[in-house]
Length: 247
Image (cartoon, rainbow, N blue to C red; front, side):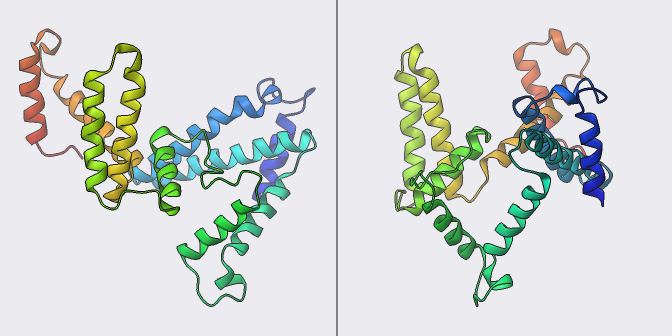
């Protein structure tokens, strides 16, 4: 009932004659950035433990699914019901120990089934299907995990650690026109190191961003902050690090 209501609302909004002047002219390309943004806002509400906000954000994210499905139906590609049927079929297919005759399941079986599905695609690479639109750190992690399943991986954590040192040396020697590439290689190496530590780099950097923002907001409140020397600012920063973390 809820999804049908939302779909009907979007259908009216998309009407070229009587609908909303903004909604009616949107395309997959113009809506995609909002879809990504809403997913991050869901994650942010979860991080803050704000369940009231989470209700709103999940609704906004659901709207994105309905919006894309409505545009697809208008173009004759698929419907919202096709979307729901496709994900339902996938969940049942990837959980044969629940919905089929398999005796054992779990994440390993899920990955085996996904690999079998990828093998049927035109792109036979182990890296097939990793979305280009993913955040760069997250995509680097997925690329490395996929490659590792083929045996292309360091034997232990010493390899990624040495690679970071190697990339730092290459940055120090690189001409200006090669710096972007070398910094990219360094970031990729750091992601690899994080993978061996079983740390999600995207989430780790997100938390580091939040920590930096809280501390900087704290020290910039100091009287005369804008006129301080770097050493004076550093003293405030060190003091902020030692202070109890803001709640």
